[in-house]
Length: 479
Image (cartoon, rainbow, N blue to C red; front, top):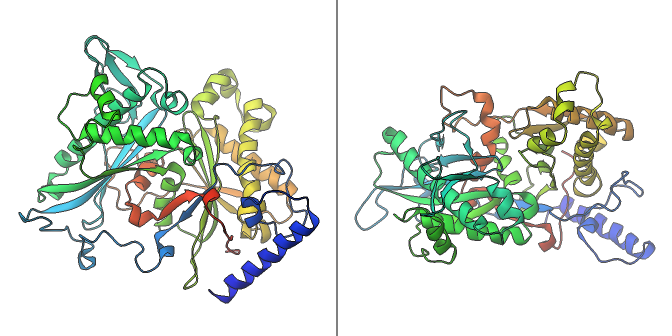
């Protein structure tokens, strides 16, 4: 253990001892691991803030000499070369990872080949009647007589919408799980076939692929019953996708009961969307050490998450801390609750004067309050007056309303905190490895940032677990 780490642990120990002597007795929680730098350093509205949903992400760099290494079947000497002769037949084989962002309004998929030169990542283009082909509506078409499920309308079919919200909030409803299993299985099958067909020049040399699938899950469900539901649904979908069966409600139900468990090859995993979303930035030329804020505006939710990047001293562990705040304040919710008001927003109009505007401002402030008082009290943005970098992304992230929310939060906090450096927005950078279609606007990449992050293998991302399972977490010093 380094000297700095030892001194920091001793300082936190004395702070906690002081608390225990002079404060009312209470159960020790995560707040004891993140004391403020000085007594009384709490912000209004955060005294009783819950730590439910807080995540800890330990990147592979922190896990010692084996971090970031591929499974044993790969040779570290050919990191940029396809693995050859993986089986007794000498067939050419390489790894393929499907990153599947299962959104409320649309689904985005990127397929990545980590052991090809440059680790190319291909955004999947779907067969859609209108709109951008990178975004597939989260809806399934169902014919009740035969039970058949398809991604596109067909004779006698009815459209089923709201698939993600249904399985998230009402998994016991009739066919809610079956519809999602069928939808995801069709998406997985399509993505696998599309990437091989459209990229024959790069992939035609291979006889087989080691497939795996990573599906995103909202950060507030990673430590709850929703995780089990999504795990069962995603696993059943992959197993069904690996068969030649027609996708129907009946076959989806059989998959949920484990009827195709022997058919699957590769594996399926779940990963919090907020952690996936930062993967591209963590590996980009724009990467900077210190505290950052991610504001993801989806169709139904506003997901605000702080994360800390820093280079560890030799021998020290790295904890990149995330404190997600997830509220149902997404773009579709905004349009539904205030359709007329949105048209009247002009420069100079105060967003917080409207109820939904105030709710969005409080959601962002709550996340920053937690960062300042618990997760990252030593951050330069709070102690040295340096600006806090904000990534505003997601399908609704380009609406001027949410940009105004960030501006007003910055002004409010600047008036409350003497040493606060304010907020400034940056675009999410597109990694060079993403093979972006030449006929599609590159500015749309931010909507695929989650899918790209999901296309990394677990040995490249590190461990993710709820902070409730960690006994000791120490925040990094100011960057």
